[in-house]
Image 1 (cartoon, rainbow, N blue to C red):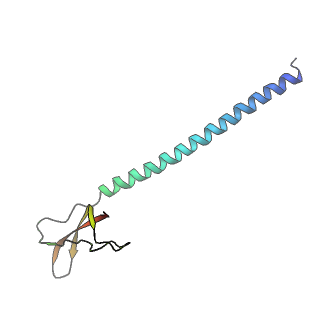
Image 2 (image 1 turned 120 degrees about the horizontal axis):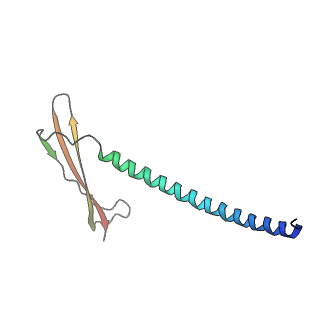
Image 3 (image 1 turned 90 degrees about the horizontal axis):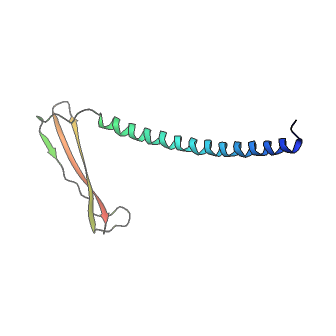
Length: 110
């Protein structure tokens, strides 16, 4: 028959093992949550790439080049182009249809 001290030691060892298991489970739960967020981001990117095709190329094109004159935050006019976001969409009016392209440079302050 096991004595009381041996049972207490076994109980303490099992409690320590349980605490480690709980810690591991919480870490794994956090990892699964982060992975789920990443999957949601990748799914959103994939859905954006599956959007409708660009406007028909046979329509006339109205091109507009837009560039900011100054920084919206500090008012500086020394701007470097960091990226160009180009949108092309259908401009549908009852009388006519045409394509519109508006590249918008995004700027970075020098």
